[in-house]
Length: 153
Image 1 (cartoon, rainbow, N blue to C red):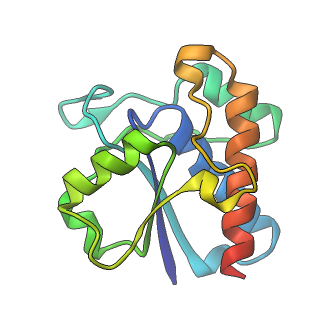
Image 2 (image 1 turned 45 degrees about the vertical axis):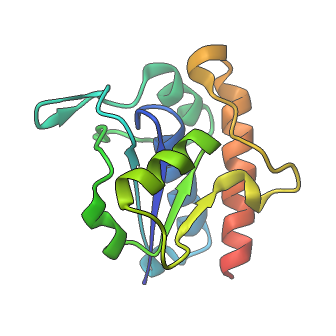
């Protein structure tokens, strides 16, 4: 079983979008039982006490346009102990990658990757928090998840 953690800054936009897009992709292929798929944040900005904020409404709406439901998802923070529990950590941008290295204490097993590296474009997933372009973020994430899945097959 392959355990994948998608990671962004707050875990309310891009990383939960990636989590649920990838879950749908593997379910549609009938291989969901081969994966554990989750998402988390590098910051605590969207986490209050023991409870994280839900998926940001525009991100949730963009997923819904594509038939993807993300009910019940709440922001959680990446922990150093996650490193031994997951096979891949997929960041949305260069800042996430830097912060994952800091939180996880490095990457001795080469588990940290950037989602757009699985595409022809490379670079960072567009951040809809600043642009309000959840459609562009969805496109980037979908393309990255598709490339990731192809690399694993």
